[in-house]
Image (cartoon, rainbow, N blue to C red):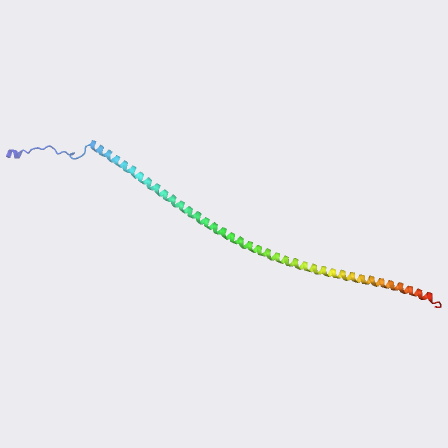
Amino acid sequence: MSAMAGTQMMMPPQSLTAGMPDPATISKQKDAYMKMLDEQVKQGTVVLEAQVKHQKEYLLGQADQQKKQFIMQIDMEIKQQEMALDQQRMEQLMALQQQAAQQKAALEQQAMQLTMEYQQKKAEEEMQKQQFEMEKQQQDMQAKMQAEMAKFQGGAQLFTGIGMPGQ
């Protein structure tokens, strides 16, 4: 044993690469991980694009809704303004018609008054004509009577002058 003890047995050096993958395996694993990373990037890109697309659609939907609300609000304001204008027009039209009715009534009153004045003056005129005619007839009759009386008196004087010599 001593001989054995003196000489130790030599052992081969331990493998430093034991349990480690060889370069071909490393390359295979690297390619597999690269492929997996590429696939994850691709899937992530698809998910990201879908999210962005969804967010853009949401924004567009919100914008459309806001536009519709804004248009509806403007339409409502315009309708209110139109109603106010219609109301104002009706009030002005009523005032105009009322003024016209008042002016027509005043004109009617004035025409009636003028007609009555005319008829009164016409009646006075007729009475004056009748009175004139009556007075004229009376004058004519008086003149006729005077002429007749003058004839009669002149004839009577003739008769009295002829029948009385000595005068």
